[in-house]
Amino acid sequence: MAPSRTQINLGIILSFKESARILEQSGQWDRFVSYYLTPYSRTFNRVFVFGWEKEVPRIDIPNVVFVPNKKGVNPYLYAFTMPFTHKKIFQQCQVLRLMQYTAIIPALIAKARHTIKIVATYGYPYAAFFRTKGKTSTAFLWKIVERIGMKKVDAFIVTYPTNKEFLKKRGIPSQLIHILPNGVDTDLFVPQQRKKGGAYEILFVGRLEKEKNPINFARALVTTKENIHVSIIGEGSYRDGMEAIFKSAPIPYTFFGAIPHEKLPSYYASADIFVLPSYAEGSPKALIEAFSCGCACVVGKYPGYQDIARDEENCLVCEHSPEDIAATLRRLIHDDTLRRRLSLAARKYALEHHNIRAIISKEIEMISNL
Image 1 (cartoon, rainbow, N blue to C red):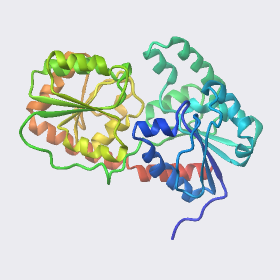
Image 2 (image 1 turned 135 degrees about the vertical axis):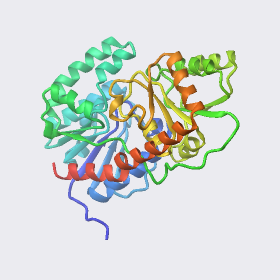
Image 3 (image 1 turned 90 degrees about the vertical axis):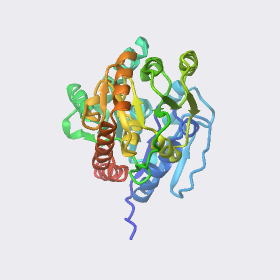
Image 4 (image 1 turned 60 degrees about the vertical axis):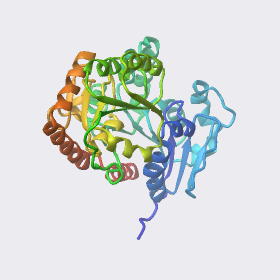
């Protein structure tokens, strides 16, 4: 028998500037509908999804309503006007679920005007992230936003313990911080028999931007001097730079662009080694998906990597230089026993810690009990 719905109306505000279009382009929209909106709709009376663009995506769930930026207002201005533009909808909501803390401004305004509670994912220290990208002014502004808004949030969701400690240091009571790791469909992302012989398949999944360390990754592949082919899933401003490095070697490579989420498992399944060479990450979904598919993984030492990546246990951890990435790759390529051991351990870790259905159930229970 299906569980009865509560009388709670839930408002979901997508991360700042995010939209169904952007999620679709990155292959994440179907994942959002299947693993978040569908179970939310079974528990809550009505679910309103606030986006940041002028769009009306199709959602075939009767009690889920998408609330667009109807006039295409600039997102920085819309952050302040959203609660007024959609006043009647916000009045109906008892809880606002922020997919990232970056959507805090409209939530704070709505809370000041209505009886409403806020649940926000705090994915990573945003100010530090923007400093990594060289955006010092943005980092400074985010420090201010955090100081103003954090104490108004009724519950935080963090994906790993390091972030819980970060929030506690900023005065957030421990009981308001819930550790709910990023999840993966462990029935969809499953290990498969990998091919034998031929070139070793190296896989990267993610945005091709500075924080992902794509240039050093490309240089590392060139210096491995091994029989490899690299597959790259994702888009970004560093694609041309990577391609120039591959062509100079030359390294056999394929850029696939964005792939729909449900099609990703076959790419992980065909990879011998998955590489996440990032300088900065939150709780990386791509790494968890690779774990679930039993990939042998190489992970760069981003801040907080220890919460997921256990060196020599479920992956190999390396520094960010081309030389260290290349040396770690060579080690995995030449050690079949190590690759098999890490593959089994990664799959086991994903099953025990990152089953998305169990995680969403805990989240729904927490929201219902606010």
